[in-house]
Length: 239
Image (cartoon, rainbow, N blue to C red; front, side, top):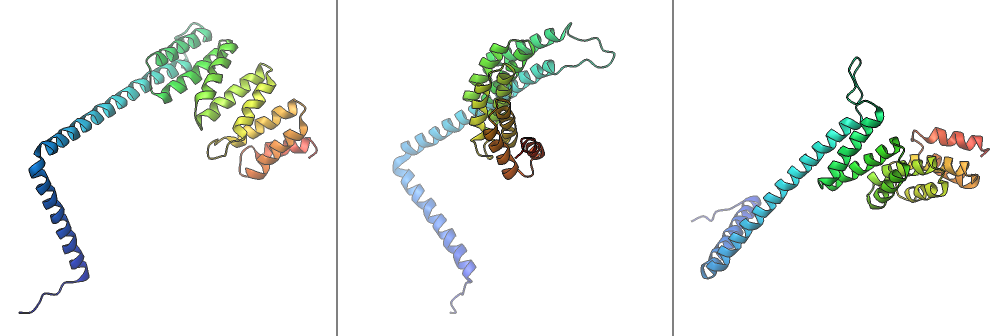
């Protein structure tokens, strides 16, 4: 009787099927004397899966709820009456006070970390509009210390600009220094940071350091929208 011949692909498939069948057989043979352990394992698996499903559902619901609250607060913050519409708020100050109250409500509801950070950022912006500069600085200082990049860079730019407005130039420079030291992969607005750092240094009379900041921008960020302004600054300084 002629022996069957199989192709290489067919042989590999048969080997995989045989290995699978062997594994199943080993599992069944193990379960027979270990029924209690097997059942406990299955129950534990179902418990773990159940906890995961509940936790995931809770996280999603919490995120949806906090995002909705944040959206409502932003609607107030950015509200502008349509042409011919009677304004909802008597004064711009009343509007910002209402927005601030909503952002505080978002924080009180213990939202996700991302929403909490954005709420604090806009609270600081509200404090500025309400001329509560010390509170704005305090809020941005804490947020800058806690946030991660790239959001940290946005906080830092706002924070440094506020410090400059309050004539706290050395403090502002320290913030720019921290951000300028980061790689572009972390600080995606490093070119803008370098521009602002250079302008601040020039204002402070630290011309050599200002030129160094502008030169880094020009040399390393040739496609940046801020490259021409940096070059203009260098030209004005006789570099």
